[in-house]
Image 1 (cartoon, rainbow, N blue to C red):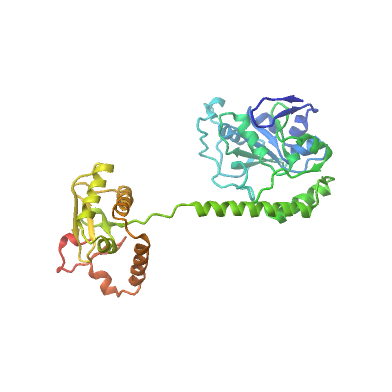
Image 2: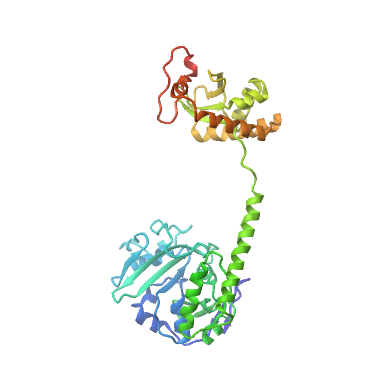
Length: 391
């Protein structure tokens, strides 16, 4: 065996008879289409090592940078037809193989959905599948990991498997690589050891997989009941970790302003009535909005007025605020006011809740009386109100 110095990750090359011919015989010369750092893994690889007949698909893991090139190699072959994932275009005559080692891993044609069942816990980003004339199937899996080392990125997919003996990979040159300690020995001896209890896996699914291997002559290092108990324990531990994380989350800050659309001025900020009542004056709110607008967005000429609902509204004189700027200004100014005046947030939440509930019982006449315009709505035309307050 040849040991590779690869930092913390285990990686050994195993001295084993070549299996490439067996792969190409079943999968129509698929190895000739593989990119330099792509690796085969999964049930087909373990079957080849143990001498069992191949009765599964061929899984190929590949880095983000080589993913599209590998997909196009299969899409351009007359022997293979894509059967899953978003359509992959064929190579153009002007394409160079080096053009597909795209920086940043552009995968515009790859599928946005992951066809793998229960694959959210794996180191998988995307997957497409191809089928040959003889009905053999190849699944190309893109690695989520992006370290810059293309081989290591591909091997991270193999390292995420749950059974130790599945930690074997084969590259396009026929090298057999062990990426999980003792994977080769377990594979040769047909021993099932679970090295990674993945909470996302359903216990029934795990039982089904274990029974499948046992029927093929594999032995368990523990009982199936013990394996399921360990899986359930991992699920409980993950639930506890997630619960602790959710408790540590900071409460969502209260926004003291509402962003609305105005017929005349575009985007407008409106203070909630409760804010003016708690502060007791409008000038501190005006000063805060103008100061934050100038400081963070370079905006001057912020105008304001009190509308007929006793709320204070703001707009930009001469330059309409964008919706994004208005939301950011509302958030920053809210934090400033809450901190400066030490507002009672609990009281604000209660009063806001009461106000929202009361709106549910307001008559249509009262709703239109104030002259507001909601998204897609019309404004009041009552001439008894000042035009500056018409929205």
